Image 1 (cartoon, rainbow, N blue to C red):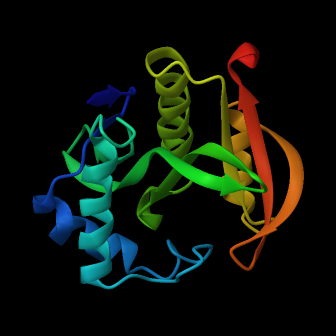
Image 2 (image 1 turned 135 degrees about the horizontal axis):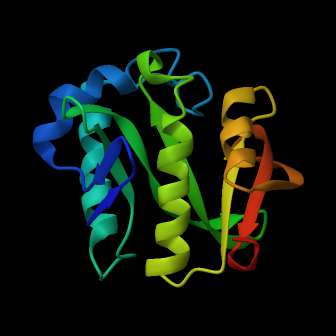
Length: 172
């Protein structure tokens, strides 16, 4: 599975991505709003292995994807869809994204999130997508709003105060 934007290719992770991806996920700024904080190389490898399981038709058939900058073929983060069995009492599919700080403020997160949204609605037949965002994460809120998401409610989950941003297929 490959999704493209003007400046990015979003493709399935491969274990050979660990060396390039691990420093991104170990960055304290990237992981500032993560419930787990910065990751070790081993945690990054486990994440990629879980993504590969998620891609299988036996699981979900979709997942988080490596974000590759077209201009230099550099892996700069991830974007994509993840299923949660329970978010405030119901199953949900989330649009998620994380990019290396060097690529913040360039609109790449918005491109990646919009491609993920479109893939979910167009290719996977989803009718609702969410993003779970801490209220202090102003940049992620801005990305969610730029792709048409609105704040539906405030929840407490995984020990975090979160805002549930939502978009329906009908809104696109």
